[in-house]
Image (cartoon, rainbow over all chains, first blue to last red; front, top):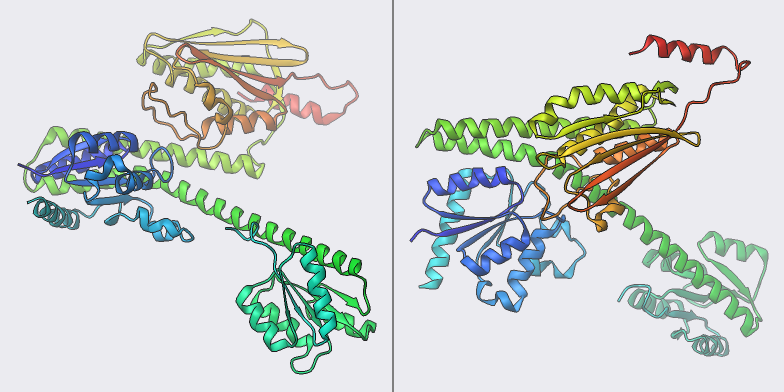
Length: 137
Length: 390
């Protein structure tokens, strides 16, 4: 069975490009265009990896999704799904929230800058899926 | 807990036992936690550890002098208010202490009231300083967020284009798909247009803010300007199955303004009315003169604007995000620019809307007033500009 990747991003063009890329490498790609839709998809489809945009309807929507997935009880069973945060903004969570003691609570597994570097992305994904599958076995 | 909620602590340093004890008592009665010390070294250690709001220090002490305490305290925290006590209240020593950074001084002997007064004043001054500092930090943060937001807006289309081309290159190595390539290249061109529009709007906004957008104030017939815009939009509107209805009156509607700006303004309103309409919908433009004003209304039969969004409609980068709204390209600057243009010309713009049924944008502009006969040659020159132009 191919690994499921959930792509949460409000730019449909960006999703279309990444979806075709990942599908050509054998992944099953699910799409969501907002944080809300993304959370619903996580609960319904239980993806193996999540790609998560930072700035959607609000400028920190992606962080809200990360926080929900890591700390809210109703998402407890999805707590260990790797989250790759993706943004055109080069400021990661530490630079974005320099004063916040809670930054640990919203730190994703990886923070990647758009446009995504294809070879690096495929490599990271392979590793993450391998680990996720291994943990499940 | 923020600095504002924390109790304001006071450190008293005086080698005179009775003096430091009574200061401590008065402060305690004021509800201020006070620590008392008999020499500069111990006092400074406590200041470094506790970062008090205020230090009250005797100028003349054995060991570290009061003057030195002042500068060392400010090295620890420049926001700490320092009040000096002196038994030798010459103007000289007081001035010297103030020069070193003391807030005020109390000559011995002093009454409890005098101490209370100076302490309250000093603490109030510190609160104000902290508040203005906090305000400054907030402003800086706001500016930084704005820059982040704008750079995100500019990068988003570029990222989409880059990603499309990059993936196309990657996929072409394995499976060539001409249909997909065609579709993606079209999308790239659309996104480039989007970026161009954003930059154009951004520049217009910069001109509005720099006060250089409005180049002339001449007699302009809105009837003519709007009719021309409607003519250029017929085709675009027809392609979206939207009909345009010109209900402007037969007479001229003269206002005083800049022809180019007025074109931008009504172009924005009519574009929006077409863009946010429904298939089979209608855009109606009407105009009238009343009470020294010219009122132009642009009415659409589109998706409407939710009530909660209306207060922010004219803010820069605000876009209505609603589940019912189709995804429409736009920069989020059009209405902001329109409002700026209207107010530059001394007018107002307002919106009435019913979600699902449509919206009406009404622009009120002061009507052109014929100058007095003896007003001189400048007006003649303006009149000429009107006959020459357009």
